[in-house]
Image (cartoon, rainbow, N blue to C red; front, side, top):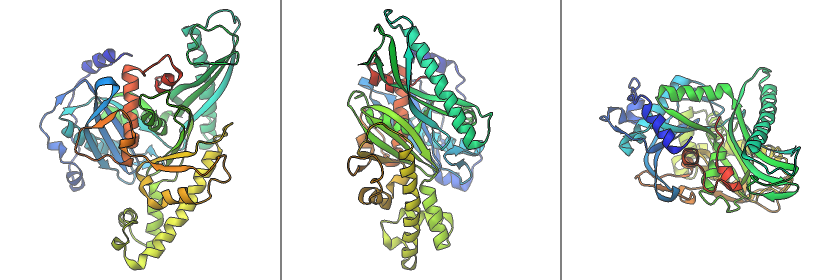
Length: 450
């Protein structure tokens, strides 16, 4: 769908005002935007909605010149403890209410309402892998057409979907589980052993396609669609969150040869993506995030969750933690770090790459701000049993590291907002098409819709 078609469809939708939730004291403290006077609607803006375990983040942006994005509105609202489970929506009305507060704040800052959204998805049941598929053409003397290429891609997606459905069925013990394609992108193509960027028009018999696909259980997608429906949002795309972060890091330099391991550490999960030479090799998740550290601290100190969270956030400022609790707290954190690090090792082993892992690790997400977590990755020998050429370099991603996105608001965007910035990039790709779509890196950026 072209950008103009999208705008036309958006204009035809009812521009109903968001209905405010029943006010309570927490909402008054978190958001005052529900009392904002009527805002004008805008069809040239897009919303990135990052529905996390701890927070919902909403960012509204307008496309600038040369495929840049100008952020004009930012909102954030805290989740209730029961709203999310392992990175997935567990309470649709509860999540919708929190999203409404975050969206209202972003719209207040932007001065406009936004109806077109891209939403991130995460969780252990999201299956993102790169498959190598060999396709033998009947007539190698006939040039490859777009129709034939579309047929090849369809077959690859069908095979990958069946594999994902089986994996999820085994993990959930539900043989009838339904899955839906979320993201797909071409990583590389060779014809008769010759690597090419655009296969259209080439002759040859043996086509080898490396293709990234990500699938999610239908129940997860349906929950996101329901939340968007309750907010009167037009759901443009759903994106696997580590895939979106990779997209943010690439910007428009899709042929830059970027390689790295992206770790998005949220409240409930850690999402990992491996990118080699600008092509995503796969995305995997495991169910340990920032909340597990908080729970360990609460148990060790015999305090409630909110107090434990306050102590965790003050871990680099010992004066804010009672002296008689510091040692027990650090022991709890170190114990949980060991479990989390094991999860990282097991997840990276599951990628089963034919080459060495990239030696650059990019950290983002709210949980990535824990100094002890960064230190254990940077100083211990956890990587020795994995296919690294040398100790990986650890870098905490900040908004300044993301090309092509300008923050015009007064709100500071730290590492916890990187996923939302990636979702903005996915939105732009989906609306107007990726740059250099004939090139292989352009195909990486161009998401194929559900």
